[in-house]
Amino acid sequence: MANTPSDSNPSQFKRKRSSIVLLGIIIAGLVLAGAITMLLQRGGPEVTPDPPNANADHSGIVVNPEATTQHSLVIYLDYQCPWCARFDIAFRDIINQAADDGVVKVEYRAMTFLDSMLGNDSSVRGAVAAACADEVGVYREVHEEILNRQPAQEGDGFTDDQLREIIPSAVGLSGGDLTAYQRCFDTQATIGFVQGTNTKAGQAGINSTPTYLLDGVQINNQIDYQNPATLQALFDTLG
Image 1 (cartoon, rainbow, N blue to C red):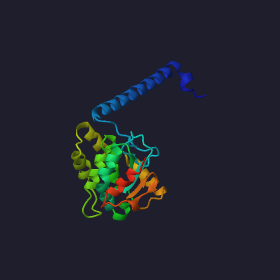
Image 2 (image 1 turned 180 degrees about the horizontal axis):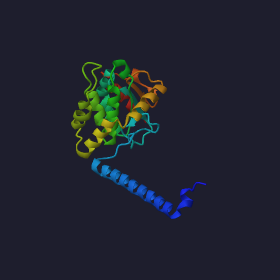
Image 3 (image 1 turned 180 degrees about the vertical axis):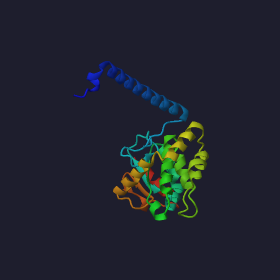
Image 4 (image 1 turned 135 degrees about the vertical axis):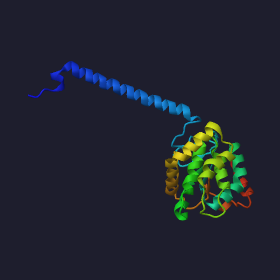
């Protein structure tokens, strides 16, 4: 009958097993040490798949999560949408003031459907960049700067240099925060979140951008980007 390792030489088998266990411990220690070294070298805040100010169902990013108001302004947009930029630029001062004053909780929900219509990926990359900016505390600033820098010709899209270097520099990112933002953008760390916001927007029945919802009611037909006071008038009615 053939001998098994245990009955042929028990002490030798135990020594081999101990050596294997010890080798496993050493390898695990080296892996852990390498991971710690990488974390120390990265600098700046850690990035995660979902931005820190994502809303409860991960369908958008909240600008002022500290606000205690029950009123909400939800804006669906695509970063390549020219009308989204026009509306944003026209209304942003009023919206930002209302957000800062706690009048409404402001939430942006990015869509990416224009990529397939325009034959590029700038809607996705713009949304990824904005979500990465939330990781380092400059979501609103980068969101606005992306829309400010929409190309004159729809479909030309954004360059990586714009999204990775020019825009973050324009809002004052530097040092570890800039490194963290760029790492997030380079690895598309937030792309799962972005794909989710687009899917959830479709599930909510949103089929055009921009779409503005005040307390869940669409207000596009009540506001005029050429007369921003029309939005202020709605805010003034909120208790």
